[in-house]
Amino acid sequence: MRLLKFILCLIAGLFPLMVIAQESTVELGSKTIAWDEPFAITLIIKNTQQPNVYSSFPEIKGFRKRDIVLVTSKETVAGKSLTVQRITQNYMAEKQGSFVLNDFVMTVNEKEVEVKGITISVTAPINPNYELLQDSTLAKEISSVATEYANVKDNAFLALSIDKEQVYVGEGFTVSLAIYIADNNPIELVAYKTGEQLIDILKKIKPKNCWEEDFRIREFQSFPVTIKKRKYTQYKIYQATFYPFNTDTVRFGQVGLTMLAKKTGNKKENQQTFYSYPKEVTVKELPPHPLQKGIAVGKFEMEEAISQRYPRTGKGFYYQFKIKGEGNFSAVNVPSPASNAVFDFFPPESKLSLNLTGRKVVGDKVFQIYALPKEPGVYNWQDYFQWIYFNIEKKDYDTLRSQLTLDIKGESLRNLSISSSDLGGIYDRMNTENNELYPLDSKDRVRWSANILIGVMMGITLILILWQQQKPGGNKS
Image (cartoon, rainbow, N blue to C red):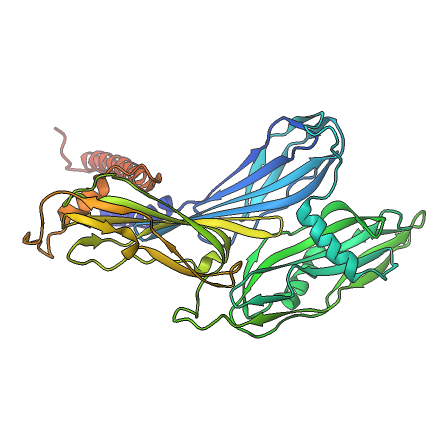
């Protein structure tokens, strides 16, 4: 009996681990790309419940690392949270031809993921006039840097760039830190303890009065740029978008980056430190409003859908309310309306997807709510579902409202007594209703886990039977 209790306790302890076990995979892009198309390596981390630490993406001879795109999906199902991260490193080929991506290993949270290499064929560009030039987002950043460093004649300099000098409370602004090295620089500069230095730099850069969305640049990302008709290579080492909590001015002090320097043909190395200019961003208060504190600020729009075109009383349906755009999605929340004599509403399930690319944080957040109609009639859904935010383009508050009108058919359930201790019928319908709006894999996960548990318990039962039979005086029949 003690052995049985021990085994059952062990199973109970292992079961949650099976449900939230972390998975990491790496996907490679197409083996054949045009010269003006990026080659991508994507690291996918599923079921993570912690900040992820992963190693650098591999170097590919003949390619330049371009931008990293970070897409995070957070899904809440039955009160449980599931997070999936997709970190994509884009590469741009320097010329046409065939290039070899060797076998490589990526380490994710101290676990290794082995990846088989491939040969990449780079064909003629889709755009016949293509050159490896900077995109419009980078061009805007470089224009700002060129203005600030117009009188700088150094062969290398460190620049902290900010895309906005004034914002509202809750409005995002993007900060990036990069070192620029002239192509004809007679001094060879080599990275020196960048990881250690970056820890100290980030302590000085990150403001305490802001929410941060980190683009997770943890190594030099190089790209050719032109500043004042002089060719440089930009090596970006940090980028993040910040959203101020209050009207305190956001200040960024001077930071320094040390590199190893040596002249061509000379083996002697010296340390050389480059310093950025201090910066600040002023923050304006939002106009007076009852929801002024904690309201989302940005550019948003909505989409909506319903699982039944002709709902009937007593038969539940799913309603999906999607908010998408640019802004701080941590402030985006659509609570379920309170149940009343006409509808019963149940707590929403949600899924958040963030895309950090270029200098923007864009995404969408989906709220899916189960509703049970109790009274026939025609109802404007905007009476139940609307969301207020501060529109940064209009510089005023705006409201996203449902455009649906529901014509509920069926008999009134006003006199139907539903015991508070017997809600099984409603919850059973929630689990069996057809939902074509958004695939929820929670039932698959539960079924998978249950099957494993049943298999383990059957195996243990068989072992216990055999063990009992082999004991002295056991059943021999």
